[in-house]
Length: 583
Image (cartoon, rainbow, N blue to C red; front, side, top):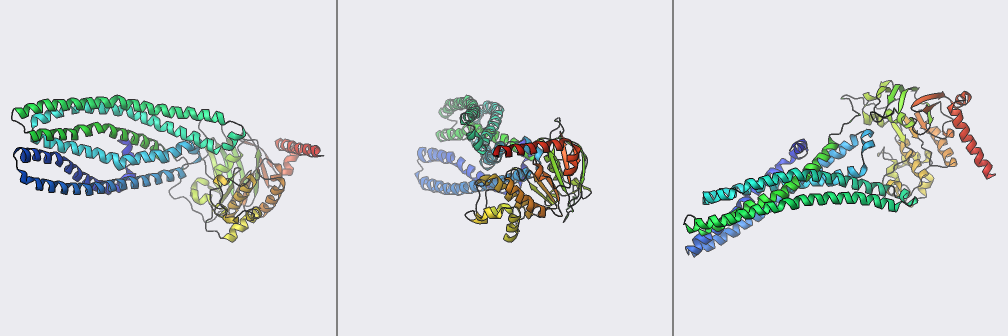
């Protein structure tokens, strides 16, 4: 029960619904046990003793208890579902909140499909046990206890014979649980891998089709699908092996009841009505005991689901916020790195090594280097997406860890190389970071990002709805909307991570011209592969293998005849070659 104890904060606030539901479960169970008693009275008193005057009373009483049972059944079902749905609402909310708080380190190792499986299938599996399985378990226990009490009242010897089968059933159920729980956990993991395969294929369908890899993807999906099928078959085999044993023990018990009960009737120690009632009561015991297999099945699924949910809820938040973190109304944008060393995963090579630089407010810092040289890592430490292993990142001469994370990021505008747009209107996408912005401010930001003209050509202008991930727009159009989104929050620090890589040279020139106005008074970091995007920077940092190997202005670096000069020559030669080809 350790898993359920750890998750109790999500269902205990709604325990009143569960307890009220249990009250009506007791009523329903008590009325259920009345049926054999009414049957016994009918046989022994009405039929055998010919007291036919009791029939109207028995019939009326039977109808009354049926009505009461129907009402109680409805209420207990409704309250049970209310308990499960309310608990899962709180649980799903907690999971989603936790996912928002986890740093990039967690997502670097997580798979989208598996996370989706946990937030849907595993949450629903846990809900089903809370809403129905747990209540059913208590109903079974109540039914067995009440039925046994009546049986002992009728005949102690016959009741003891009936109870003889229970230890055997308990052993079978225990062994069943020991085998079925690992099997269900394996099913959940396999389903997560299957969902991941589907998610990756749908997300990358353009790549799949452009490389004609449909058959390859079908084969990979078939492998995962086959694995999921085999896990389910294995679980079914476990169930198929244990259920016959449960049924055999139950049948042996019924035969023993018939033989010994018949002997007691012949000997005059038990009435016919009580013997017949005994058969009904035994079914109320053996049936629920065999149903324990189903309950164990549900419990094992819920436990496996709960364990997978706890893996998210208990995941370490490696980017921690101090209790009394600073919440500044504004920041100047002074960024300083002091001997910063950083690696993404412990044991991997360092992404940054002893990085030091100072970016005063309003300065433009260019970052250039080969892929994997550490350019993006610098900006991700600045925004506290990750924490450095050594050194300090200072914002306005205070450690970035002193700031409230949300408050800090509100002053940083981030435009990524691959711009993500939501499946909503263009207006909402631009205003995502500043939802209270007026339409005039949104249009002004779009104009600065050179996006206004193509937006006005869309069917509904700024109210045009976009497809998933901005489908329907070109890469350059998506980047310009992302730039407008960053401009609209009026950041003190602006980070452009290869933000103009998907636009043509003419559009890049117009965006750079607009950004020159936007960057005034802001500390700006420009990550680019094109030197043309960095020429105007106040300082350019050239990175290789996580270290700064050169720094200076564009002209200074060209005079150094170092790595920057080589990059410049390569790009210039490529440009010259293209021009010669055109000629």
